[in-house]
Length: 66
Image 1 (cartoon, rainbow, N blue to C red):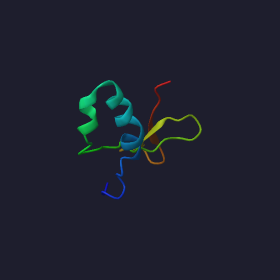
Image 2: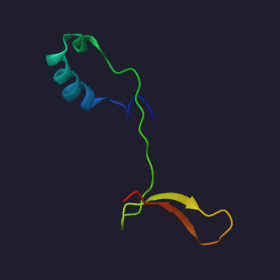
Image 3: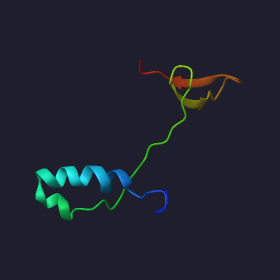
């Protein structure tokens, strides 16, 4: 993730002002780091796609938390 990707729009326009209205110290706080966990998932049932099985051809590994 580059600085261009991480513009913190949510943090700057919604989260921080809301927190600062309740806790004044948040007015001077700023986000210095961010992380996003991107992952592939099945559009059919939203199961996370873990990848190919190491020993079985044409067999995928999925994780379903429903």
